[in-house]
Length: 343
Image (cartoon, rainbow, N blue to C red; front, side, top):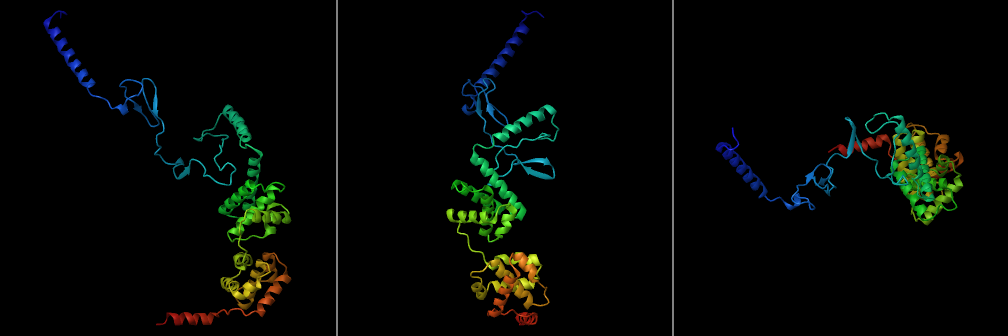
């Protein structure tokens, strides 16, 4: 077919006209100003999961998209682990420091030798850069000592966290100057236990801390005075569950001993005495009174309360001379229950 033929020219003209009209109609549709690049003219922005950018000039318009995915990393299908550890006062940096791995990556694949050597150097520099000052080193050492003492005594994490906060306050008040970190750490654990009414023996804390008992007592006095802790005094009832568990006392003996500790006569007797010794005396008195509900020896109770046998005997003799509240016998209590259930 010749290029000058009428049919070819007509077809070409019509096709060009249709395409021109189609382009003009598309150009007449205005684009939204918010969807266009502010630097380029009428260039549509492109968005992906992380950012919104211009495909021509590369301008990033928005890069702070919300992550709507889960907050844990599914390393195992049956277990959901969080991405990072929680913020805790038991770390000098509140637990937000970096932890560099050793042999495997995040997907569990074994690292090559060159990568392990590079990570070894990074761990060394990370260890050197963890502490900004000598105060941070002292804080890290004191908090580690609190965790060690709490683990040796079986203290809960909440009490350890409270002890760590007390240690931070003592460092802010400049109470560490002239005292050992171990003594202040052990005194913080002792003060946190007394605050929660879970008292521990002072020599027990000193044994776990490997510090002289006198230094722990002095450090606790400084904390109590300078920080105004307002710790309530220990009561015999606070030591009773621990002593009863140590000597394996029966439930009825524990109830009778708790009834004695709550009485006004025993409260007046406890003035000027060790609360643990009074609790041991009440437990021994209840075991002797309720004969047949489990025998409790003086030696076991004295060892558990950290007192001598003579001190326990004196408390027991003083209890015999007091007007203690009566305890119902099994027959009378059963009769009372029957009368209560009868119409």
